[in-house]
Length: 490
Image (cartoon, rainbow, N blue to C red; front, side):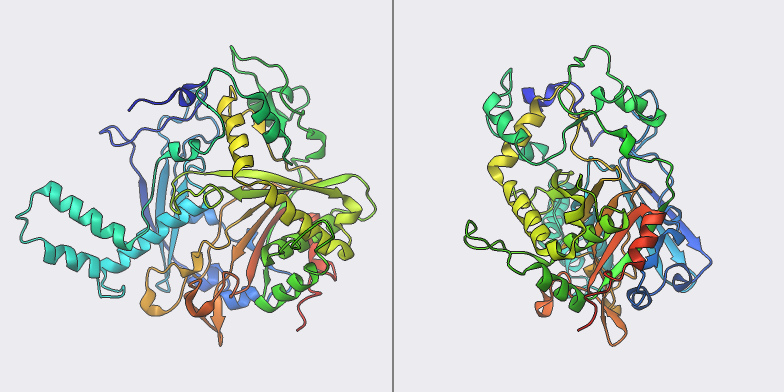
């Protein structure tokens, strides 16, 4: 395959596969002498915890394969020769429960790609056991369609793949589909100044790693070092290291909000969101409302109630739907959009609707043409890793969302009628990360498989779980805030 010019610029990621020397996928099995309920509280128990579940008590690493992932720390510097892109570990519990842990290189797969893989895995597993609708339909069709191996092996493989594509999520690995959405001629010798200006006008941090080495922590010196032969001329702001305390003890807390509680938050955040210049008024989603509410609580706990300085919410945007990419596009097509507000306003409950509207309006700026301009800029950067659009200091938060991925609709045993006991992303223990997650659907104390759209169920039908990774002192103040459960009453 001949790669177009824009893919051959320095420090670009290149992936090959299908060779005999490929490292393959790590697969491990393990056993835990405890029952699942002794390791993780039940979904009902977690939902009933007013101050949330202390997720730090769960050592998730024990349920993941021991492996070095591509592009982790040290890889590319003479180390990591045994690194792989993906691994999985299946752990059995004394009660008969099973944990499925999957680890992937983030540059190759985001949460959507990871979920698509697990959905396909679960579907094939159930089909082999004859537990899917049609009692193992795909594999029986294959057996019926093949008569004792009379067809050529190539035809047999093609037949199998065709049947699988009709039933299971089909991953699409074609990075050039994303590149094709960039504005302008990305194979030209120089970037288009007008397109660059359009992209850089959008609300994002633009921190230059190579201009941030003078006062960076020792652990960040390698990231801030200018590689030999590259131009160190500043192309962004210096990272404000003094705002980031690397020594704080980080707590990991999961707060559950019921569907009714979420509705009450949404109604409060939807008040008077329109103005004379907005026709029609901005439509606030429940996701917007909850995120605005959580950010308010975080800023209050961080002590910004009387602070006029700016605080920043860096929201992760998925690009598949925005750029009409395939649903199961393999990769990590994400970027960060920034919402900024004076601290005292971000702490004010009376500003909840205004904050939610600001979030919705900000997301609206990142339409197809805007994203095309950002991608144009990225294509011409001499090192795509050089500019950081986020930050995790005391005034910043990075939020990511697994909403609408249908994680609680995945089941390796659908006949049980129950979805996963827990879906838990693994994030670094650093101060300032929020994750919006779906939650298990519980009826009459019993958990059911959560399928969005089934029976008119929404992604938040089981409520929403919010993962918080923050300074332990901040989390203690947040869960003690009387505002936390203000909307829990009917």
